[in-house]
Amino acid sequence: MEFVIWGANLAGGFLRSRIEQNTEGSFEYNKTLIKLAEKLDINAVLYPIRYIGNIGGNGSAEEGQLDALTIAAALLAETKNIHFIAAVLPGFIHPATLAKIGSTIDVISNGRFHINLVSGWFKKEQETFGIEWINHEDRYRRSTEYLEVLKGLWSQDNFSYEGDFYTIKNATLTPKPIQKPYPPIYQGGNSEDAQVMAGAHSDVYFMNGAPIVELQKQIENVTEIAKRTGRTIKFAVNAFVIARKTSEEAFQEFQSIIDHADEEAILQFQNRKETLGMWKNATQLSDFVANNEGFRTGLIGSYNEVATKLQELSFIGIEKVLITFKEPLKELPEFHEHVITKLNHSISNL
Image 1: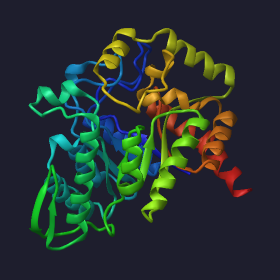
Image 2: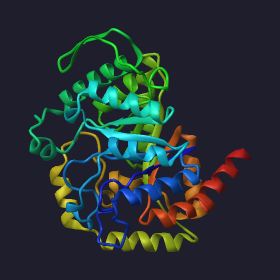
Image 3: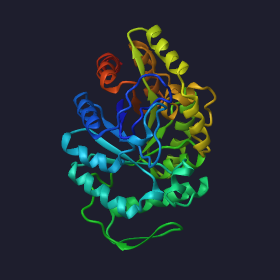
């Protein structure tokens, strides 16, 4: 099992709670975080994309959001092994532009760049910048074309494409990416449209936090879709981690976070999102406190309990877990020492 951490390029933290948490989104903080993650053999970092607002409930929105592609490119020189995943919204950047930027970053990084395609759920964000808000089905049709164009430019010469959203005429992109046939593509979304696109076009399917039974159903659906197109796909899930010496300590902290939930921030988020799949099973307050339903995955408890839960996720076919913490610089080394090490030992003895 491999671990991916959330980058901190959006100020405000990852909890919609008034609890004390790290809210830094500066370049210097991200430099410190990426160096620590690489030292601890974390596989990759995912930088989310936002043009307005933030995630956490107690951060200062005016601190803004560092662009995902730019911060990934800037931090490459600070690392040697860790991979960089930049979230991309199709409406904001043409696939040809992304193909050029992405290929350049992949060459500079010697094959460590990826995108996480986000079809979009934040209507106000797109309309604020003059981007037409199209319906859910069309957003995924556009994303499908986006990936077809991107992969075509990354892997073919004299590439042409005629779609409803994009047209390419006999284009050759050089240099092409180091990774062949192209940098593996990550994709989120829990709707049927998202699952169809993932099975047919993406390489890693990111799922919002969820219990085992919900994750199994998604894995089965997407695996079947991939099989019908002669493909295989990897699975990843989001999780907010509270791992402590004892279960009591972990759940006390969890309860404190929920007791201080920023209900104003949660209501604002609920009113902004326009989705058919993500958050459809979120019914409790706690489901909206952590970013992308992170608490629903259940990585809360003693170090042993969290390691056991990760084994259960591995058994159902999850190969990557996207993690974050209340205080990442403090908790990531503890997670590595007490959970990852234990997990690796358990797996090696199977």
